[in-house]
Image (cartoon, rainbow, N blue to C red; front, side):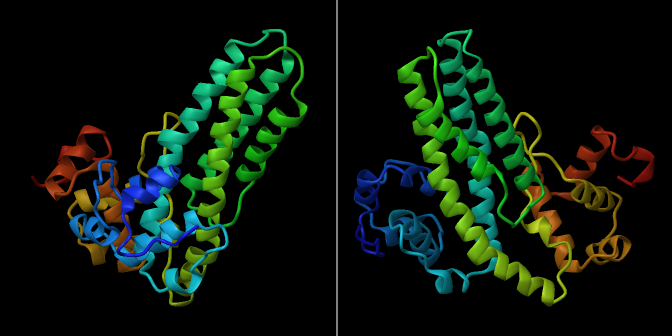
Length: 290
């Protein structure tokens, strides 16, 4: 498949490969792109054109992997993209599989015990993936292998009476996520991991703050325990340097936590954070001066 360049018409490439739709969504783009080139789209949406092209070409071409190019980008740029990908898995692709799987089981033979085992395998995959996302883990986890097993069981080993059409829908949705996970894990392993190793060697502590994207059981973003510690100290009036000293972490780590807190809560001002902490019982009104 041809490589995208800055002069490529983005909508034409998406028309040829619909799997790019969720990828561009991670950059905040929606369909209705007209005849705009990649360069124009990136300029209008304040996107790093080179990073955008590197990611899309990775998805379009199986043998393409611009490791050297991607390693030249800022770690925040790469980690933010991976976080958006994780959020897409939690809010879109996992619910999509679950919806099809539930319909498949509900319309198949209720006496087919294999279907209940398939549901348990899917739930185990979901728990494994959420664990990796919530803990900002870099190493390849077992979730990909579990999802691959689910696909192979549905194709090769399922027996008894079941809904063939909905079984195909489950297989298709699982295969779509498998394809995406494979590329996602490759970027995480080949690009982000070396970046993190360099940060660790330079003395950057608590690097998992860059990667973790905590969700509760319903897929809603939550504050991590460390972020909550930082949040309460911000609300209590401590400066960033004071927070770093109190928690024995670097100033850069404090700033990273504050960035994550703002992204998750949608609250930018200290006054707003104080209100949030008081209303949720994290601190009392007596502890601060309004």
